[in-house]
Amino acid sequence: MKDKSEKKWSPISRKASSAQSQESRRQSNMRVPSQKSSAKQPISPRPKPTSPQESLPEKVRLVRFLALAGVASRRKAVNIILNGQVTVNQQVVKEPWLYVDTKRDVVTYRGNVIRPEKPVYILLNKPKNTICTLRDEKGRQTVMSLLEGAPPVRLYPIGRLDRNTTGILLLTNDGSLAQKLLHPSTKVPRTYRVTTVKPMNEKILRRLLEGIPLSDGVAQADAAELEDPYTLLLTVHLGRKHIVRRMLEHLGYRVKSLDRIAFGPINRKGVPRGQWRYLTPQEVGWLKMLPNPKNSTQS
Image (tube, rainbow, N blue to C red; front, top):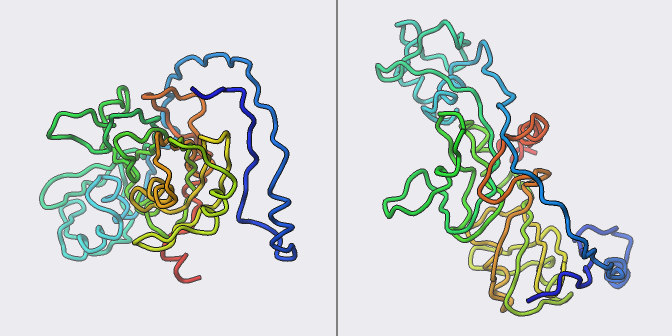
């Protein structure tokens, strides 16, 4: 069992002034370990999710209407509309950018009336032995079973966490935002707390920051910090499958536990394991301010 009073190791980051020499960068990144407080922290009460802050707009473009109704992403909705599969007030409409009234206009897709849903954005603190699917044929617990009290809308996980990986998982019915966050060019930093079977050292941090050659390309950490010899804080912006485990296994370290503690500036503070909350307007705003993939590729 690890001693909670072990010394804390300071982080090493890839960001450094170009004027510094390699040796001076190494020296500046090495700091005197600070003593970790052993005082017990008060247990926070279980949070009560508040109502979502975002309301349904009065008028939206038809392409967004279909996305909010869960028919398809905006990109796919454009083709659906152009193919004449959508009617507005009993008239076939082939103009994706037409504005429609979300309360008064009657919109159908393949003959069925569709209605938009209010955008919902949820943070779940995922526990172990839970899978990131809507349902499971083997009867295993899914993340959807943990969303008691959430609005009755179609929620989808943004990305995946392994069955035994814990921590932050975002869910939403906003297909366009989910698609943007999952695109490789968006590069959202994700921070993990990793515990390993054998102790690590500063050399391992440098290897992670320099980049690890994997079968699907080099994987480079954005930041790395040792909380103690067995516990690593690792930030990556790569969304590749099992990326953190594969990076450490390449260096000869077997991962004992993996916990996502941050998604960009969004953290799970105050949310117990297996519980959830709505994202704040500020958190949703940060996600929406991220550049769209098409804009990233053009710059």
